[in-house]
Amino acid sequence: MTQDELKKATARAAVDYIAPKLDADSIVGVGTGSTANFFIDYLAEIKGQFDGTVASSDASAERLRSHGIPVYDLNSVDGIQCYVDGADEANPALQLIKGGGAALTREKIVAAVSSEFVCIADESKWVPLLGDFPLPVEVIPMARSLVARELVKLGGDPVYRQGVTTDNGNVILDVHNLKITEPKALEEAINNITGVVTNGIFALRPADILLLGTTSGVKTFT
Ligand code: 5RP
View 1 (cartoon, rainbow, N blue to C red):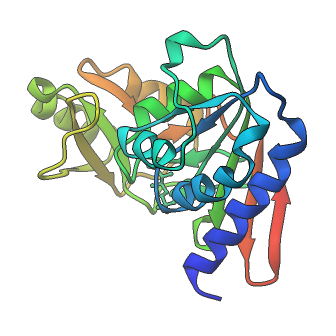
View 2: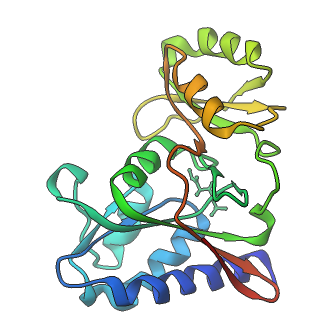
């Protein structure tokens, strides 16, 4: 199977997983990226079974609307039943690295509000230890050099993601060569650097369930 076929299988599994939990008042949180895009396309098939969505990026909001699925501002909803999103890496504790698509801050906000976080990923994302994927950090533009120097002190090699501005008007530093043995502690340490908006470690609020697309089927981890 190709990587796209694995992504489609996990996206399909996510719709099958959440459908019985939804009712006419339900709000679904929707992530960003190629796996999330497949999820959006399948979600359209059951769009009459829930109220609407909150999207973690302008791109996902646009794709949802193109299917006729309502998209709400997070401030106008009382809660989110489940949030479905991809990941760049996932470990056995269901801690993640996210932000390859530069949407990490809104993704973290939607995850924080959601009762259940369903991660969907193909098997290439499954790792014993987080950190091979360069860790995205969203930074206020004027603090870019300051934050980069602080990230070097933490043992990383930050690289400015040229030409990318986030939906929040900020920039991304991708931090290479971090050994993330203590994901929660590093998530907090990086978030405490002045000028950092947030970083792509999802350990303080990990996924609740991972649907992993593998060549032998979609495996469920909780
Ligand atoms: C976007 C993300 C994505 O979930 C992550 O990059 C995975 O993307 P894809 O499904 O395309 O592999 O965090 O900010």
